[in-house]
Image (cartoon, rainbow, N blue to C red; front, side, top):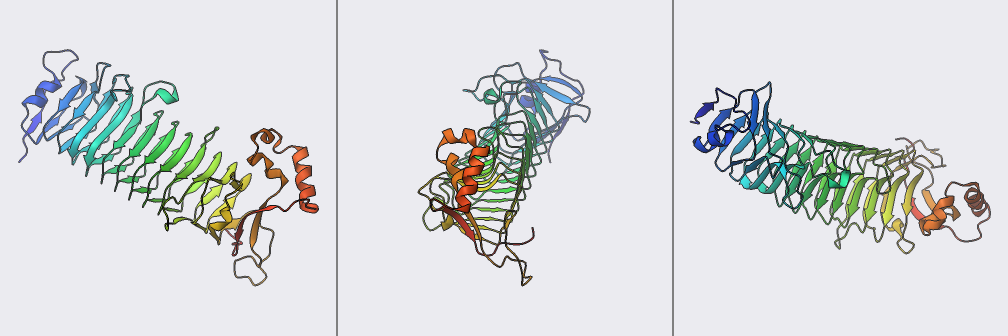
Length: 401
């Protein structure tokens, strides 16, 4: 049976009696219930232990250098703590909480602020990061630390966390993680994957970030039910796929972004496909932007509505028509459904006319939307002086969303 330790007094900052003393003296598997108060940080936990904060506030305050709480043991739980004032050094990953080489860690309902990195997991597995509020230091975007950093860490649950004004949430070299119902705002990458596999990204909401979700060099992942809004700026995108294979990207909503989807050399591995289906791609500057060799995607049952351009291909030699396009809803489809089967009687074709010159020559983009380009485009469609480029054909365009 666990030994319960109840602290009767609050330890003031700098006092002889410190939280570290209590931790060092506690038996393994003890539960430390902190009274309301302020506690000196830069502590280290090297044994199985639970620390629970008081409902009225138990704040662990760092000294402005290094990491506030370091964990190097399995079976550690931190719950309902307020954690403040880490160091500012990126090279040492100064964090509110850092966990190294551990299993069965739980970090639940903690409030993190004024910390360069929020929660840093290094070689951590079978752990839960749930319900935390995380905010970085008041630095420029690129100088903030990551709200949650998952590094070589597998089979974890990262759920219902709220990240604001941090840099990124990164999942690198990590597999089998569930990232669910998180909310991130005013950051850079809401969620950034590199060299990962078999993760599930489900029902997250990301708003006002530079990039919603960017998957790179990864495979065997499912992204479903996510909502990405207002990813704007020169690099703004909702969902990015770069050199990824065997992905299912389904039932996501991407709205008010510079680029809804950005697809770059995906799928990457031979004989593999990606499934992109039942997504709502709404009111973006570009609905789906293709770059480099990106073929063999199954793109079906998506809704393309209100985008300035539904589909863009910026690589002349790549035929994105080699992707499978089927049963999508296109708001610019001009056909009919005489047999009332819910699908257009004729295929939907998207061509690149003269107004797409800006895709291949950035200097022309200055004139995008101008009367000159509009007139050239009208004349090209009325009496083509060159063969327009077929971007895609959807044989069964849906008539209703």
